[in-house]
Image 1 (cartoon, rainbow, N blue to C red):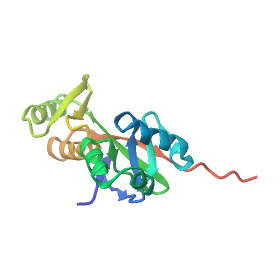
Image 2 (cartoon, rainbow, N blue to C red):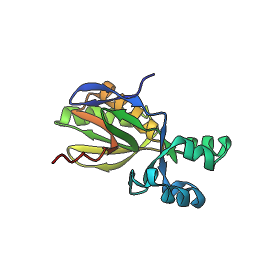
Image 3 (cartoon, one colour):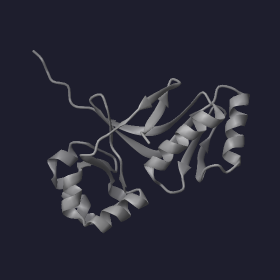
Image 4 (cartoon, rainbow, N blue to C red):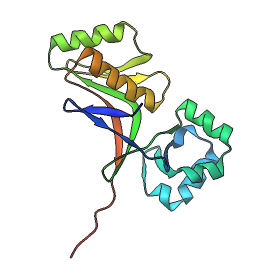
Length: 170
């Protein structure tokens, strides 16, 4: 199944970037963090604890069993391309509601236990959900599921976006 998200009510397809992986530095071995810090290609695309690194770099540092375990735990996540940007989904879903009807529909859906998430934040016009798994792909699926089933004003996974530095023309 192709990955997608909703923006302004429109379904947007995501193109997987098979050459890169998102690494949560707070959840991987210190030796890998050190290697990522020393690699110019990874350090150029870092934000907080998240680093976008070449898959080949991860494959050199870890064996296949370690990589699979870190993926299951959500420490290694997907990277997508949208035009020139690299998009990294985070394990967080923001749901916006315009009125009580939408809010009630979302709350009923969440209370029905259709997904394995927790409400991390709630206000009169917004809910923030997090998958218990901590996996970004679960958050992407939750965001889409809520939008398609409960019909709020918006439901989207939180993305980090890395865009190339513009070229300077003089």
